[in-house]
Image (cartoon, rainbow, N blue to C red; front, side, top):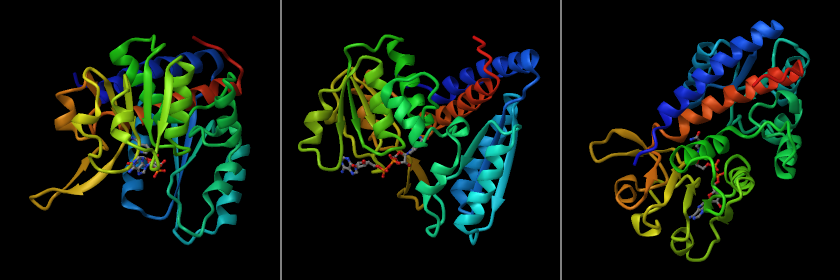
Length: 291
Ligand code: NAD
């Protein structure tokens, strides 16, 4: 079975649009997301455009701040300081990667945790690790869990989740989320010995590596749920560029119980979860707890 991320994201956005309306009626607050883009990386421009469009579609206010490549770290910090203070802005996202002369860690630390809708601030990672309520949780990991549940149902307890990758953006937080779902979690990475054998133990296999089609059919236990986070641009035999995941989709599809495609799997869910975080941040700003 193919897990349709586009459809799942559309359903989540429909649900969010209703909640945005409810918040507006109850409090007069319209959630606002501001995306800051430094430089003119073409892929980042596409991401930012998609985010803006979908933000507006769910009834939120979308703002974009575009800064030139030569923007200094101090200028960006000053910009974030004013967004931190702006009560119309509930979520701030600085599009990564940043130009090499800007220290990403310093920028992430500058956004106040309440508006950190990427969930990358140490306060939000700490809250996630401690299982505290109120954390803004990184978007791609949230999307991975929601997609796994789409196939397996809400109760993931006892499942063995193997995560390949240990980045702060995907691998580590997604591991914590599956642990919170009472899974047995194994984190595999570039130094893991006999990665195929580790992967074959997985009921849920998450690939977040950045290596095109690395996970082969022989690595997958029959019936496993495979979540492919990777986005890799490769050049096909006809010379055209195309996107592939970290999983050899054609081979693995024949063995897995369910698999997310690339594109159309985790990617759309990431943006929908960003909107979910923006709604949470807006609700928290007025302490309104709506269902
Ligand atoms: P990263 O480079 O920060 O981390 C990659 C991880 O893979 C590392 O922890 C490393 O230990 C591990 N790794 C590298 N080579 C390995 C190997 N041969 N065997 C086992 N493990 C290995 O990358 P990231 O930011 O976590 O992103 C991973 C992939 O997910 C990339 O393709 C990225 O484009 C994609 N991504 C997609 C989304 C989305 O919305 N779908 C969001 C974020 C990242």
